[in-house]
Each structure stands twice: as C-alpha cells, then as structure tokens.
Length: 412
Image 1 (tube, rainbow, N blue to C red):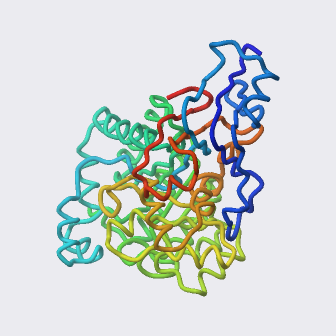
Image 2 (spheres, rainbow, N blue to C red):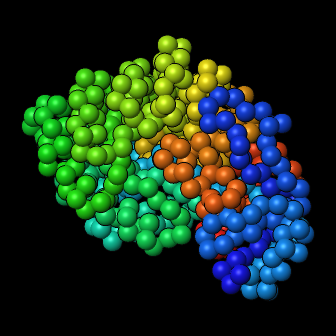
C-alpha cells in the first residue's frame, strides 16, 4: 500500500488498449472510461477503472492521492519515434532558400543542408551540446511527449558520433523524459572522407559501431537512403553487417525517391521512416511485412511538400506511427501534437488513428512493450488535457496544451 498512488477523477480516460496494431481504427472502437481513475504501484499501472470504485478499494492516504479538479481527459504519454534534436546551430538560411523556391536537394548540393549542421555540432563542446539537447527534451516533455528517440548523425566521425551519443545518454539521465538513442553515422558521407560511400560505411562498421556496442551507447542503427546520401545496395550491405553486430535497424526511406522501404523489408528493419515518395507497390509490400511505417509530418511542413500517404498506408493494413523528425533543417518546429493534428486533417485520419500513431503504435516503432496504453502493467506515463471530450484535442490542432503530465507515476 505504501508504494501505491491514485490519480483522478478524469472526465474521460482513453486506455488505447485492445486495439489492432495494424490497419484503420475508428473512434467508436476506443475504450473510454468516464469518471476514471488510475491506481499506480511503483512506476506501473496496477488498475484502471472508475475513480470512486478505486478510491473505495484502495483507501489512499493524502500523500498517495493526486486529485484532478475540473474537466480532464487522460491519454497515454506521447511517444516520438524519430527525432534529431541533438544538434548545434541553425539552418534558417536553408529555410529562407526553400521558401524562395530552392529544393532540399539543390541546397545540399550547394553546400547547405546536413553538412552545415555537422560543422556546428562538431564545433560545440559536450557541455554546450548537452544543454541544447536538454532544453529541447524538456520542451518536448511539456507538450506531452514522455518518451522520445534521438539520433546522432551530425558528427560523422568516430569521436563526434560518440560525443553525440554520450550527450544523448546524459540527457536521458538528467531529465524525466525517457530517451532512446539511435546511431545515424550513416547520415551522409563526411566531406573530409576521401574514399567511396561504400568505403565510408565499411569504416563505420569497423571503427565506430563496435565501440558503440561495447559502451552500450545505442542499440539501434539508422541510415539515410537517398540520392544525397546512400544508395540501396550500399545501405543493404551496411544494415546486414550492423545486424550481425547485434543492432536493431531503422531506415530513412522513400523521402524523395522510393527504394528505402524495400531495403527495410529485406533486412528485417523495425521501421522505415518518411515514406512521402512511397507508391502503391511500396505501400502494399510494407503491409505484408512486420516493418512499422513511421510518417513524419514535420518534414512535410518544413519542406513545403505533401504528407506521407498515411491514409493509404492504414487502409492497406500497415502499422502507422507518427514522429516529429525534429531537426534543424527540414523539421525545425518539433511540436509532435501540432504536426499530427495537421496531418490528420489533410490525410483524413480519425482521432483514434492519430492518437494510436503517437502512443502504442509509436512504442512498437521503438520496440517498447511497456508503454503506449493505460492498462495493467504498463508504465504510468499519462498526459492530461483540460477538456471534457477527447475530440477537442485534435480539434484545436495542437493549441490546447496538456495541463498535467505524469511520468512513471510522478507529477511533472
């Protein structure tokens, strides 16, 4: 009893439990508990039900009770499965060029793009980079994101990639938000590397990934498959070698040209992220696989291009997760709820599909089985909005902010 805590009453509580991992979800399928409470033991959910019943059963002491006054809708804490929020510098100049008519690939060829951020991130010392990343992580938490992924990829040499991964892990220790690190040393070829792109990937395999593995700095490896980065053949060979080293795989794929999703399927990747360029053939193939389709509306908004075909992906039977892609170049906004809400209006996603995309389906994109729903045994990560009806949240397109966030049973 001493380690139990009761939270409530909530006007509505969406458990997001017992829903299909793949395919469409209608709002009518949601389990909504009126006048709800959550009983927590240690960091885990012990029971979800009507608040008055739970209060009678548990008889909590005053210090074991978090009482909610006024209208409140509770959802599982949001999960962002794809970010690059560990970086230094700005790319406002890139953005200015894009809104004046230049394309992302044109800017990259002219010396802008990712390389500009690489230079600034390399110049930043570890303490400064930690402070920048910590600020962004705290900002994410305030908007209801209780778990986030963060990639390296702006170091592009062993020392700077390890510096980034160390920073990401230190920020994980310094803030309440849970952070999953991903090694994206295969972002682009560094300008100082004199060999081929294939040779660079071989260098990463032999000189960096064993150190990352030995120090447990990341369990995941990512690669950018695109004209400005690595081709399909190079990526497949790299991923197969990384898999043999014991890494989980994820891919930046089908952003401007198709091909990445096919590699994801062939290599057994956990997810393929972006998919703006996916055609019907890729969408159908993904649906037959176990690869999570992670869409990134922040990149579409930042680049001024169409959204990934989330509606088609769902209708074909895919598991669609939604990430912010928070990065200084193509997705500088970083607000997951705003992006998900805007994409849902354009792609015609139901409330249920959109919320699933930032909760339990996003959890699967990170292979996290202990969160994403408000149900027995899951982490007590809860985001609470000041309204009576859950539909108000997306209706306000991200302008309604949560007024309470619970992380592992503790009020933030």
